[in-house]
Length: 112
Length: 114
Image (tube, rainbow over the protein chains, first blue to last red):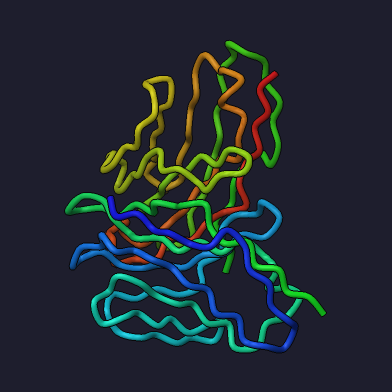
């Protein structure tokens, strides 16, 4: 399974953009990059995912490099409620199913 | 619409006992996956079920088993509990469980083994 590498922690000022990097240099062509976050050991919350193109939704933007070996999650205007553990995940599995392989994640702290 | 629901929310058991955890997927979702999250680590994949059949299994001992019912709800069973089984058990549902689909997680069941 492809592994991901994320910085263990990051800080961000409220109202500023939070840019969370992720390295997935062993990703294969049919594996998706997913981002989830987890607040206070609640269930992980889906944020966004992509295969090769950049993606944007109401929560965030996902920028995937052309060689697909790394990506960046962008929270455009971070709020205190965005403080959480952010997981960059490669969706792997067999030919008929997908499994999320979580790493340690990045603890994002948004401060006033 | 209701999200993924899990029961119970918390559970305390002693070593050697058996436990059953339950999960109801989002309406219309036919696949359920189970994950274990021990304190300080990311969730680890245990099983995936689709249409009552097991389609994927993580690196967990045979003490862990699961099943899926005709209404697509699922149970995770753990026999002969060990202290190391203390964890947050998460259920995730998706339409059919393929790698192109998003999995949506429930709130989890926190199991403490004493």
